Amino acid sequence: MTTPERRPLVAGNWKLFKTGSEAVALVRELGQLLQPAPRAEVAVAPVFTALVTVHDALAGSEIKLAAQDVYWEAQGAFTGEVGPLQLKDVGCHYVIVGHSERRQLFHESDGDVNRKARAVLAHGMAPIVCVGETLVEREAGRATEVVVRQMNAALEGMAESAAARIVIAYEPVWAIGTGRNAAPSDAQQMHAQIRSTFAGRFGQTLASGLRVLYGGSVKADNAAALMAQPDVDGALVGGAALAAASFCAIVRAAD
Ligand code: 13P
Image (cartoon, rainbow, N blue to C red; front, side):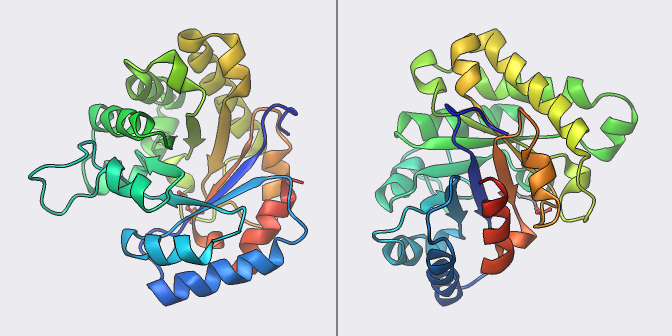
């Protein structure tokens, strides 16, 4: 469970699901179910094309808007890309960067993730930087090495003044969409490692405020045990974020 200075964050990554009208219907339902206000901060990450309508539907709500990806240039001849300036313009507070689906399916490198995270910070938003090992890496005993490498690459060249806004999501690739979540004790171990890697760069004070989310088959029935771990400060939720009831149950597990 997070310490008082770390408010838990539960973010729904909707991936490539929901049209604009479906997205609006979901946030309306979330708004109703999240009364009274939960202890956790809540964010939703719809597809790019739904950001504007979801932003409008969230008017007056505490729920924060997040994007699922970003390109690092603010403008230029980059056909098909969406930059940080545009995401800021439509009211994004958070931007997910380095999700394992981006790394695996779209060949994003550690360097790309670093450029994206820095672009998000430079435009006053907060990156949710995803790290996590594959099953092959875990079985080879390399999980920690991989996650520390991803962390160090993502944080390279970042100013200490911006570091306080960074959120890390530990998403073991083998746990994503598989129904097989990390054991709470394994998640705790990696989260503690992530915090100490961050401390190595930015010092203990900033590290003690860093929020480290867990992602990978988080459901209503396993969320409480995961979030009860001292270094698990919330969740990045995929499938269970697509229905208001299951997402809200996860949000309440952080109360
Ligand atoms: P699932 O919750 O569907 O496993 O997805 C996790 C995830 O990738 C969130 O970013």
